Image 1 (cartoon, one colour):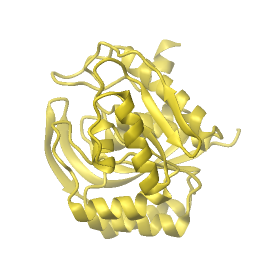
Image 2: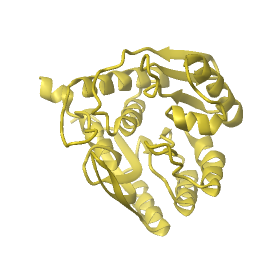
Image 3: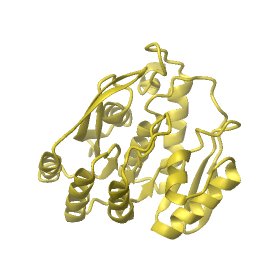
Length: 265
């Protein structure tokens, strides 16, 4: 059997299976990599909303990371929901210790309704310790607004925000354009400047877990040896197809179809 690449997700659990750890592991299976997980929080949620969040004890988050790296060393790491300042500190401590080659950080900072999910202390730790370790960060437009201080209403504002985030963090940034009304273009900004990933909007509200899925797919591609640009290109194509499959589950904003490629064969 050929070598299997390994990818670790550090994120919260979604009981409805559309986002978080569940979406990450489904995405990893779809990419034929071996997925592993460190759970930071357990949520009670479905397509209609989030009804409860229970944070895992920070010490136990560290034990999970230790257990993974002590045995099956990941080729890439994806970080998702980290809502607690002590959990962020623990994740930073252990990733500084193990120094994984690739880290994809999806900075989950703003809820769908626009509420901040991180307090100022947690934001500082995220920006000053976790983000500097990341190979690429993948904020959506509300999160990019928080990181940059720029109000984003169009693609030109996306560029301005990316420039400010890069000046602050020196990180490669992918600003996701899903909140734009006219298109779904994503902006990659790195030391070489601006690169666009153009896409038409799909008429489908069932996009629960899109951000989790995209960042996990990027991590999978990096683990398999693709560079950042092609990892994002491949991941965006995967997510586009998963949304376009038209899965319709639940009575709210449902999930995309992570198994779209196997189902279509």
